Length: 453
Image 1: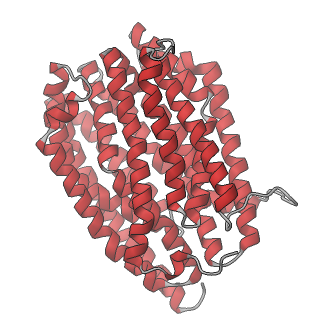
Image 2 (image 1 turned 90 degrees about the vertical axis):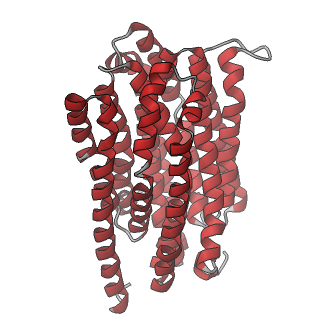
């Protein structure tokens, strides 16, 4: 067992770069395959693109459950590693794996039995409903791959092995990108499967990624081992995972609810508006993935040093990560403002979609800097053992304020003004996060000074 983890000894600026870059790259590749999916599906028809936009929130819910459990495990594992409690590390890893597989089975059965009924709720258009059902059934029935992949990736991240985590994710994502045109349009002897091909390419990539992540953990992760010998699941082990994991699930699930409700607000105006919002969400996720990568790196670093009682290193994480996030988000904003037509053109945007989307991208992008700091502070608070703060911040920025304001603006002023709802929602969420995270930090500081930790 290694005695000195790099999260305890490596200088924080170097450590952030060392852990963030692989995560940023892997998340960018993952987001890229979502964009590539959209580009190829758009070549089928705008109805197909609309169908994938309507289904996307349900895909996010599956990812939300898998990521929520995995992040809870990640935070607990990093803290236990910092405390040198290696037996509990193994027990927590096994518990996390059991929980994530059990969760995936629920979605498997739901997809097999209810995909058609879910699709009929999403759209009353017969063709769009049919396309939704076809895409959704495959993604749900074979979803266990993404659950297993997420868990094993978090085992690697908890031990600071973000490069290996990147390898598994990139292999899965690149596989998806390669298979997309082959399975959608029928190249190299493969039958043309249309929208079902896009779904099949996605799940194949996820399953391959899960296999690679499992193998990398088995052969290269000495700190986090999976062993069922003398294992017994306990309520306390499950509780510790979901203290962080449950609020994280709710937090990550809110965007899918936001997208679904926003789609219902936009659909009366035009299906093109729904298609645009789906495209915007994928583009935004792609350009802001570096922020999520940095946040995912901050979480285990903070958790590990929380376990060792090293407040100075935690303080330096804030010092260096927040300015970096601001710079990255400003670059994303400039891209959205400068070339919105080019970005939308990647998705074969119609004239109507361009008229809605060009101003929409520019208006929403103004809030990227606010959102980036909010997200980063949320990861930091989770690393300090409180994911409720991130949950409330997300509730403010993507649900409680955004949706009512969007509805009011759409009803009173028209679709061109809907996008301004993002401005006050993001600003108020950021103010809350600054105050709440500051109080949490002061509480931890007091605990450290009293030698409770």
